[in-house]
Amino acid sequence: MKIRDAKMTDLTEIVDIYNQSIPDRLATADTEPVTVESKLDWYRNRPTYRPLWVATKEEKVLGWLSFQNFYGRPAYLHTAEISIYISIEHHRQKVASQLLSRAISFCPQLELTTLLGFVFAHNQPSINLFTRHGFEQWGYLPDVAVLDKCDRSLLILGRKTLS
Image (cartoon, rainbow, N blue to C red; front, side, top):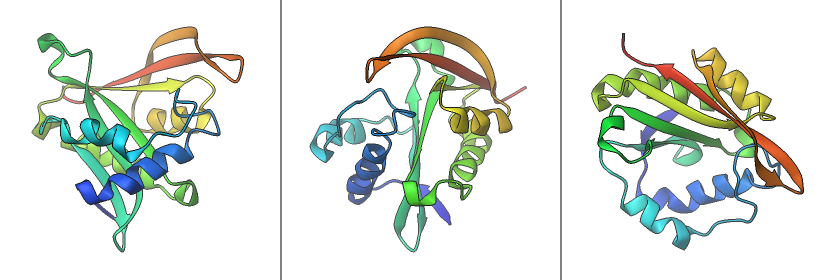
């Protein structure tokens, strides 16, 4: 498996993988599939200091990880939110773990001291992943989302990256 910066030509696969996560109601608050067109600005307007990576095998995208600015204010420059999405056929193959390990180790180059993950409280696989990588629960937002008429809570998981 190789991890590299995403290219525009990866966007279709990135969107396909994201859309795979919608039906199970574990990883995203989107309830309908998104389109490549709707993600063009997201891709094109990413600051260079907030990478988007893809994990590939033989040039097929297995999953992706993105860094996003947290809260958009200058005082939060050294904090980033990360998102990880893995294609269904590559779940439980350590793709997410390898992406997250690389993100943590890359933080000094991005001048990041804090990483955050926003995870639904019922998404135990993602909670386990982040916990294995040293994240702790820093916040709990009860019943802030409604998915299929079910109230869902959100955890804020955090980790300091530099001592």
